[in-house]
Length: 142
Image 1 (cartoon, one colour):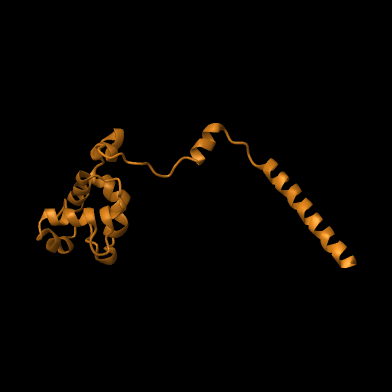
Image 2 (cartoon, one colour):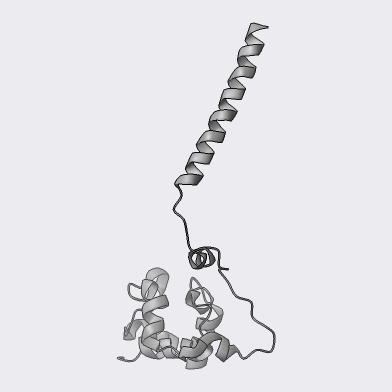
């Protein structure tokens, strides 16, 4: 019986300690403004409505992004070093066989993905025009 009292007593102490520690840690949290809380719990994605203009949804109020901006944000990681066979920036030997297939094929591969390249090179909000601008940038000095 003594052991049973000790076990019950231990559980009571653990529960009491957890309650005190939990209350103390909540009191120590920095107070956040309503705006900070809204920012913290904001959704991470947006819903596209069928029939909405894709170009307007992709470009927002700022308009289309430049090929340079798209390349530096989404393409640079693979195309600067030729990761997994990606054609390097302005490297004629890398781009020649691709361009020989025609720009329509190159753009289709960029949009749909090809081999190790994911669709749109991970720029899921890039319009087709922005994808073309990124390709044009990558081959601009050939």
